[in-house]
Length: 222
Image 1 (cartoon, helix red, strand yellow):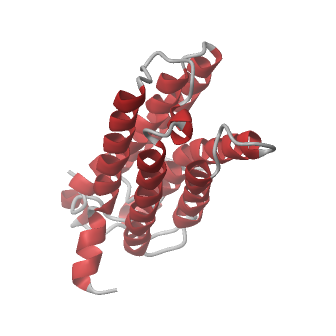
Image 2: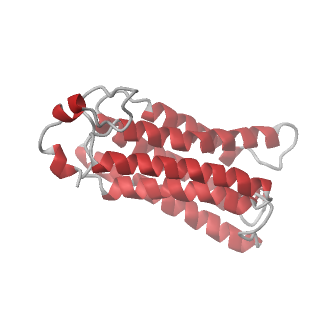
């Protein structure tokens, strides 16, 4: 992968966020779907006035997010499971984009399963990213965003039970998209850990780990 392409893909996540929210907001406006509606955002894929926009936006965003995840994985420099979890989530998103929630037969079940896979993958991939960071403020912030995503998923489930489907889907998505923006903006600030992290020390605060980090990483994690 060329350097120029790598640099472009660093911003692919932010581009995906822009594509997703633009297509969803325009689709909601064209169909009259409100933020307090009891129908899921996915019903935009069944409306003639928004179907192509919604599905196309999801597919384009999925491709952009995979490119973003790839360059993040390359920078992590060691196996973390991050990219695998990210890909599983993107498979779920692709299912949401291509299988109609209002289709015949098992399409509703398949669509819903894809959404569940996507939702569960978000805190998991953020956790794997945080676990791969060097000990310091940035790693603690990464874990903080992970827990915020967990809270978003829990809130989404509660809102879904209260029949606020649009907000239920939006809350965890907003946190994930915030994480993408933060990782992109602070691209030069974060540095992957150069040591194996102990499962018993998730915050990476052990003296062994700290001693193994090059001194310059402290400046990069401001």
